[in-house]
Structure formats: C-alpha cells, structure tokens
Length: 526
Image 1 (spheres, rainbow, N blue to C red):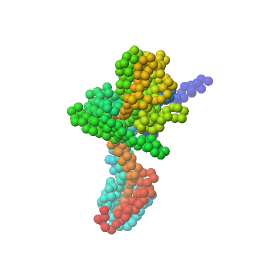
Image 2 (cartoon, helix red, strand yellow):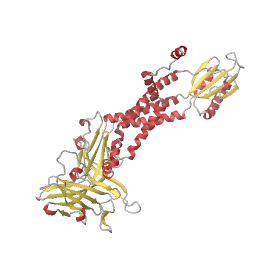
Image 3 (cartoon, rainbow, N blue to C red):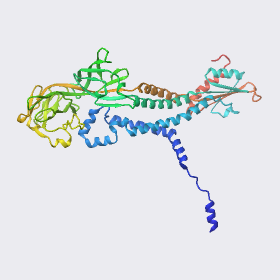
Image 4 (cartoon, helix red, strand yellow):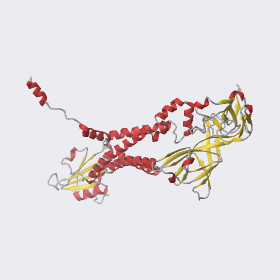
C-alpha cells in the first residue's frame, strides 16, 4: 500500500499553463492569419446593418418615421446601436481587434520578408533530373555566359564551381506584404477620419440659409479632436428646389431627378456664387462635402389666436408618411397663443383627389393640387417650456397628450383645406390658415481627412493582391559538365521548379524559353 502511494506521489504531473502561457496563446491566436481572416469577414459582416437599417447620421427622417410606425422594433434597433452602426461599441471592438491582429501579422512577416530578400539563391542540386522541369543539351556554354543570359531575363543569379543558381518572383512576397500593410493603412485612415472628421445633418427649407456652425446642425457627430473652431466657415441659402417625376406608365410618380439651387459663400469674405446641388454631386469646400440626402414638403401656415394676434406664421417641415405620393404628416404648435396654447395635427396631400368613400388621398408626389387635412386641433399645455427635449413631429409627450383638450377632430372637417383657405376654431379659440407650400431638403455635411488615404490604401490593396496572385516564385539551376570535374565535358543540364502551389503548368512554357536562350549558339541572346 505504501509503495503504491509512493509511486503516485512520484508520478509526473502535467505542467500548469499559467498566466504567461495563456497570454502567449491569446496573442498567437489573435495574430494568426486564420484569426485575421475571420475578423476581416466579421468587419465586412458588421457593415451590412449599416446599409439595411437607416442611420441617424444619414437618414434621420427615416429613423424618426420608424419610431412612429414601429416603436417596439425601433427600440430594439436602438438598444443594439443599429441606428449608429459605424460608431457602435461592437463595431469599434471588431475594428480594434482587426487592427491588432494585422499589426501582429505584419511585424513578423516584414522581418521574414527582409531575410528572404537578402538570401542568395541556393546552390544547384547534384541531380537536376529529379526536378519537376529538366532539360539537357550539349554546347560550349560557360558559367559566366549562363549567368549573363539569366540576368538578362531579370533573374537573381548566384554562381559556383560549374553551376549557376537563379531565382525570380520576389515581388509575389512584396505584394503579399503590401496587401497586409494597405489593409492596416485602410484601418488607420478610417480611424483618422473618426478622430479628426465630423458629420452633421440639417434640414433646410426653401428661402432659409445655413452657416457651418455647430449650433445650426440638427444632429452633429464630431471626432474626438474636432472643435467648433475647426469647422470650415462657409454658408449658403436655399434659393429653390425642383423635382421631376415620371408622369405616365407603371412607374408613374417615381422620382427622375431633383436639384437644390444654392447661393454659396465659401467664406465670410468670399463673393457669393450659384451652385446646383444634386444627388451624388456634393458641394465641396476645402475638403468639406455637403450631400443632398432627401426632400419633402413644408406647407406654410398662419395661426391666429383667440385675441386676434398672430401666434405662428411660417413653413412647417412635414414627415413623409407615404413615399410614392409624398403624403406627409405635419405638426403645428403655437405655444404663444392666448388665452391657451394651440396645436394641430395635419396631413399634407401634394395632389389631393377625392375617393369613392368620401375620403381624400394624394395621387401624385408632385405639387399639382396641394391640400391639407385637419386631423385634430387641441389646446392645453404642450410642454414646450418644460425644458424636456421634444420632437418637431410630435404634438406633445404621451403623458401630456391625455391632458390636452380637443377643439376639432378630423371627422368634423369633411374636406381638406386648399391654399388660401382657413379653419375657424370653435368658441373663438383662434384660426388656422393654409397660406402656401415650400419644400425642404435634408443635407449631410461631412469632413473626412481619411477619405483620400483610404482610397489610396484600397487601390494599393487591389494592386498588391493582384501581384500576389499572378506572380510566380521560381528557381532555375544550370550545371555545366567538365568544369568541376564531374559530368561529360560540354554537357549542360538545366532544372527548374516553382515555389508557388498550382503554377507548375504556367512555368513549363517559360522554362522552355529559358532552355532555348541558354542553348542558343549566339552568345548575344537577350
């Protein structure tokens, strides 16, 4: 019994992995090529939601519409940061892991590459007949002449006693290394844009202007190193907006083109100039680009309160409810009305037509017969002065909506209001007048200093991967008999192989050309 216990105590125990061992394992796993490829795939996969789900920085009106139409789904999207994919925590985590993995791949590859570049071609094997490509011929070729002819074909050459070794195709490894470096450069360019760039969204109504200051943005996303003073000091006025639509056929109502006509000042002291802003044709001023994202209608309303004073007069940007016809929902608030605040829920119909059931709808997105449906008029406290942030597309927060007093409901206004017509509220509470129609545009202003470096890195990656896939690494050896005391004098053997898997067939033709050059009687062969 004692012997068994002694043997058990003396039996070898497995060595503990330890914290250092786990750290080494984690680093080797992270910096392996397999992990880098997986992270690169995840990086591309993580970008997909940014194309499928509307982004706050690009389409804020669609995000607001989704919150109205499907608040439960929008809440889940927001919880997982799907409205801000490219600034989300999980996207940044993939980005940083990929960056670290590429650095860990590039450093050892660079050291290996420089060692390989400095290495001379190895000496010729004793038996060249065993190589995949072999040829022999008789001639008076010398080592010096064979080396000269191979150098003329851009081979790196090493000579010895009776043999010549030549190698070609180092650019394959160069392309492979440059591809990884360009991917790293692409990530650095994206990071540089995130640090020193900014994006902002703004809605501008016809006749209004915009100056590039932080206060004028509806949504502003600056980089960590961006300050208010670093914004380009340009400004512009939206003079006019025009959209054209398909008027016939199955695609009737489809947008054909739209343009915003701006009056631009590149700086406070620069003279004004006209500019036609179109989709995918941004206004660019010293690297800051202004893109035309979307458009809609902004009906003009005039609200008169119960005391006869004008409580509100101006355009109201409406949220698009039905894209094919641009039917839009509008909210008008008059917090200065007396004796009580006034608010209206409206629906704008660009081309209003009556339906068979007595209701009205828009038949075309163009402004042919503009009318406004009154869905409801209310009085009470809308919470405008409470200090709580509110959406311009919402009359009041849910807790205050229940306390509002309805003055008019949609069923009591059978016909929509055309331009110039007004609605009198009961008990002398006030009046709503529809006075005209303007249009609004949404713009994205972006400054990205990493845009050009990212383009150059992507171009370098394309060229590098093409070189890596098309260039073959190959070696050629020549043995000349009799010069080293072996073989028959005047006998020349040539052998070759490729160091690239699957390229042997392509090398056969080149090897044949090399043999012809070496066996040519004219020593001045190029």
